[in-house]
Length: 291
Image (cartoon, rainbow, N blue to C red; front, side, top):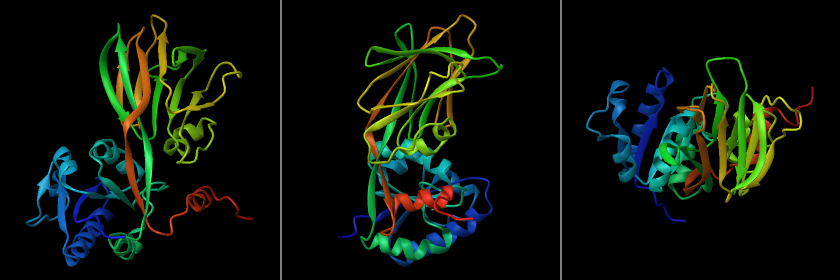
């Protein structure tokens, strides 16, 4: 396999003192390989960028063919929403906690990148979600998500009433703290805390997971990812929001509908050659560990 990556974009998290050292080592290593390096513009406040080009996120997405994301899964989620539509492949260097998507450790970074840049890697396609808020049939907000779209209560400790349709067919009317619509990638995140199933990344499926439903009959369900999900908000005094990936939120009004569907683009996620999804689950969740 030949090396298809020559223009490398760098994106990093903020507020972590480890980022500076990791980025300096990373830049020096990539320069040593003669690769073109492009930095996200806000890095000027974190490291000495020297003569390296600084680009805003949209320009970076159009200029690089590989982005290395230094941070945790939250940093990766943020980058994925912007770069996936441009077809940019992403690699994650883990400075976070769980690291389901940022699966390269800083101490292994240079060796793993050498293998990847030599063409030894595994590439995955990850499904994204697209959400629209409809108010009197007019689109008032749109956002994308790699993990999940969540319709949830806010401000007061009171349940909200939701009506859920799948492809125009009524699935349920439920009173709950909210509803999570997750991708397979997001099935190990917030949805898992709500009792949802873990979905393998290669499944063409979404999970719908109620948050603290009033009725025990409202259970998680797995559906085809070609489906269109409509979540209607009932109640004149309902206070609710829709949040994408726990990072982008919008306040809903009574009568609003949140329509969720599969995004037209997928994320290209690059892993080292030894990547093993089930091994990741074992390490992160402690499966197979005997006391």
